[in-house]
Length: 278
Ligand SMILES: Nc1ncnc2c1ncn2[C@@H]1O[C@H](COP(=O)(O)OP(=O)(O)O)[C@@H](O)[C@H]1O
Ligand SMILES: [Mg+2]
Image (cartoon, rainbow, N blue to C red):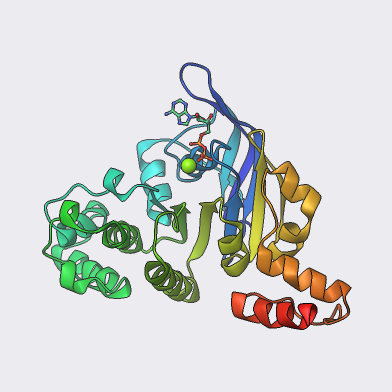
């Protein structure tokens, strides 16, 4: 059964800007799903529906196959199970210290101070930011703030973690670190859903991708299959990842058989590229 499902979500912002129009999406437990689309496609608006922050004007959300409710207590259960990391950490962090910020969610769950302290210690360790515990969040670097925002979500032990453009603005080192953190989270049972317009990142990291067009998801499927389909990618105003394109060319040239796995990393793609051009 799907963990979360969107059925026919339609949403217009006050003032009439239509952001979602009849959007369907299924979130399967344990997988990594990339929601891909260009700027303004409606990705952030969708994430805000997936944790109940926005309520659709038509259509509905299902949790564990049942229609989601929007009462105070239902929303609080929903947000405990589905964590959201906003694109801009400055929109998420507000407390005087990192530890206090990360403890806010656990304390709100009604956990004791000791339990909350334990959750904070765990989350900071998972993000490798234990040394930042007493620092004021607004004085941290961009990448550090991002880790604090993720730690805040992780401290809630969510079933699903939604991340809005998690790689935007990160340097290579921070990106490698983030991917390692997300991998460990998934290994511990967290379902990952992230938005991005970075097709290379989606190909490298996602099991499944969903493509956006005109306020709808028009295809959701295995990452390599969807990302290799140039006409689908064009419809989403994106291009196929270069690493995947090189793999497909190597296949056409007979360097790879249908049974061989396509390259996932730049290093593997470059090996094929050299063979193709020599
Ligand atoms: N707070 C808002 N008020 C009015 N319109 C908005 C607001 N946020 C987003 N929009 C509009 O909704 C559409 C989808 O935006 P968004 O979900 O932010 O897209 P994405 O995250 O894919 O870039 C865009 O046309 C955008 O201008
Ligand atoms: Mg956005």
